[in-house]
Figure 1 (tube, rainbow, N blue to C red):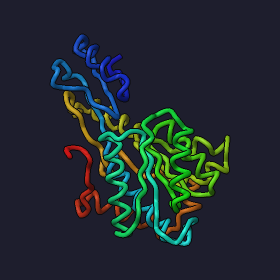
Figure 2: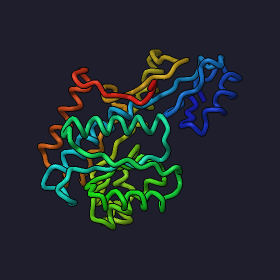
Figure 3: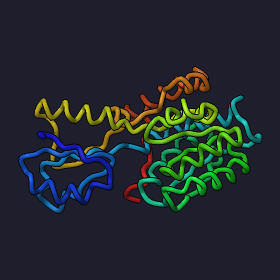
Figure 4: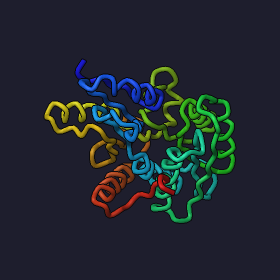
Length: 262
């Protein structure tokens, strides 16, 4: 094969060993980067995603929801965040989410919980039930399989959820429509579009191998899942505001904070 795609952090170490042995081949990895300082990786292209930008958008949406007629809890404006681990990449989601929420409502309260695990849905559900009990109308899942418990909690408490990475509404659209109906949107990492873009640039001889590239809104690396449930739940004025915020981020009018380097 001319191009071998080996994605996510689970394959990073393997790629760092294998790629230098096959300099005639081209390798892509995504949602992680190889350590180029090790050398011999000039044939590897790494794709990272601006999760802080996407989280800004869903944080703004969460704030609009909790301050609107869609609110399901108490009169306070409270939203939630569930992280798998207290690590920089998860905090990059959190920083963007909080900034987006406070852009809409400077006084909003953001409840934050870390599960300390990626594969414990029961723990995720327990933490988010507590946030819902504290008045959160909506919570953002950034916790892998643990975050599936957040979706269970949203169904049980009749509150809202925001999925992550892929369109999590589609996970349950057929198998559990009631649970799916509580997933307002998801903060998408557009892996498919980013790989298509990379292959296209490769064929044009323009792909920058030997380094990592961070794809944000401008290069369609991230986005908000605009599915049938989003259209059903989210008022048109809110959706239009999200599009407006996207443009402001791309233009540089809004600079989204990051957890990296702090």
